[in-house]
Image 1 (cartoon, rainbow, N blue to C red):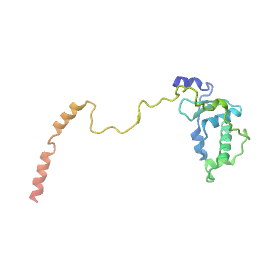
Image 2 (image 1 turned 120 degrees about the vertical axis):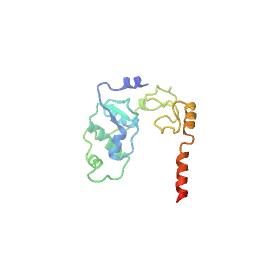
Image 3 (image 1 turned 90 degrees about the vertical axis):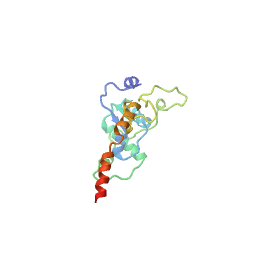
Length: 173
């Protein structure tokens, strides 16, 4: 589980990047983890997943190399021209300096083999279907059905006096 994921991370790299956030800055579709990690590994940098989320990764590559890879991905998967003055326009206007030729060829060790045994999940699965933050059920108490019936008995005829008074006042007009 999580211990396995922590053990596979690069120990010397304290911070991580999120692939979806990098893609969002350029308004481009997100590359697959295998394609992006292969581009980093083919360029000679180390790469590992982070335990925080499936699209998070750690690398020793400088940020300029990451943006070079994302610019190359944008050339392969074109997007609408970004607005002038936007961060996407500024990033796409630059030329690739560290990695002029990015190789997205997926490495053999990163390809998923359908016959391989399922590895230990790195991210905790939900304990049951539709688990998570939901609206609290209304009308039920935590003490069970006994308290619900006593509440009904307490509230029986609660507004009867008020309703009689209103009828009386309404009939006098």
